Image (cartoon, rainbow, N blue to C red; front, side, top):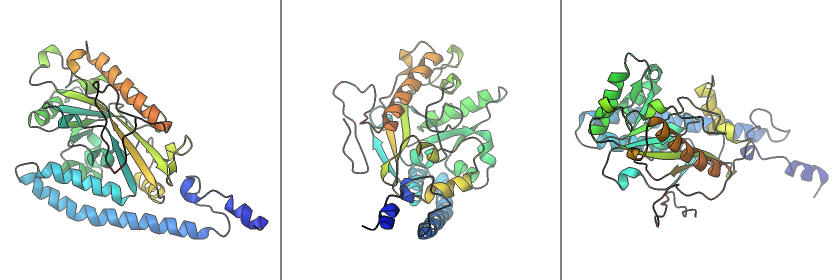
Length: 319
């Protein structure tokens, strides 16, 4: 092999290297064009899917039954495929094995967590109040029956009642108790206030107390290869990042994968108070995420003796 060709072959492939964003070695400008075309194609796909989906979901909200729940889940599942992310699921949803209300609790590192979990779980998201005013995203969130919270003491009671009503109506809630998104390198401490419904104060103890299911979410493949420490923040959306530029940076790549690890549900009655419950859930989520970040085989934590994890997307369970 000629020396120049050998040197060229040693250059990292752009789809394996998130640093290859704007500048490419001479002779590889075609990859940059291909990336831009990929971003445009995926963006158009999302728009073409979202426009009719908004109208369909608006109609589903009027109809009785589970149509509004099932279509919202279907919308997010297709959305995730359109942006090029493969979803691997390990474990079982608590609502498949228990006849009780369920609160799903997950770590949070990106806006992508919403379509990923929305396509896997039957539930309503709980989001900060200002999301409702975001262009397009706010509309989609409202159609998805998101519960908006302001975290203001003056409205806490009403917001808690709204969430309790969702659970009483048979819905499940999806919470991100870190209170913000992170860079994906670790799980931030959970705020115990997010567990008020699962572990209410004595005077608020009404209705059936829901189970809490911890969930670890890690983006673990880039260009079809394991995503190491340097690549993982590439998926993250946090701080003052712009969502449009992040969408373009993410969707220019191929071979993207996220793993959703569904741990065994916890009964809040086994914990002395909200802080104890919050810490236990955080530990499970953090341990699961740490295992996935190291690209090690993972299984749901605290499974009952003899239980085995399920998987989807055609991949075998990891033992």
